Length: 270
View 1: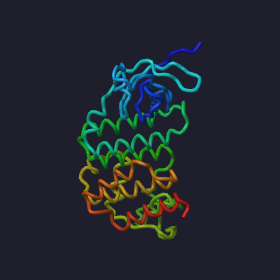
View 2: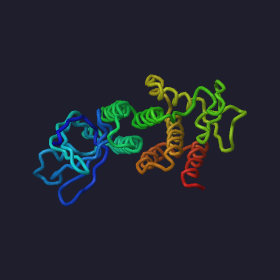
View 3: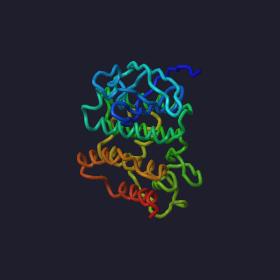
View 4: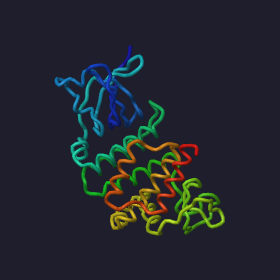
């Protein structure tokens, strides 16, 4: 006989199923990524429909099913969505975080505790609204890539390991490269941009919070290009975040555009 089980998790996405049900994708503390059916949650009389919305941090009970488990109980742990959905920049950043987590936690049922804790921390920071949304997103993306083994090299040459500092950055090579290893298409971001990447990777918020908007914009472009290179296709939600950044900052500089373009070519096979 199947046994009920409980876990805490973050709702990454939802899909309609039939007239009243939804398929909920969660990243959980103990079971990694789960997909489960929430029956009747689209009805106005649902007991817990509002709790199973994207960015919700919940404690849920599940009943094992033949193909998908079934959600039987839900309580709210953190109502992150309240502080996120009312602000466009926070919402798009949270959407990119959820989509990235969904992509990186590819195998259902495999524990991904570090990624789960990282998602919870990032959504909490967005909901609090005390930090720049772009910094929160980029810190999450860099650390999530580090968990996957994709962290950009920022202290040594990505190809030969020669200690830095180095001035050229190549998404194809995996980060900073020395003059000898520099491939065609590498760009030269400002030292402040590399300094911000280092600060975000190591959680140095005192340094990150004092950076200029232009530095943040250029760092975001490199992070997005690096992520896209490794995922081999762009996140659906990330262009919305980038569009917001460009509106506020009059566009990315040529170096960042070149890095993003290189990743786009690789993703499309061009």
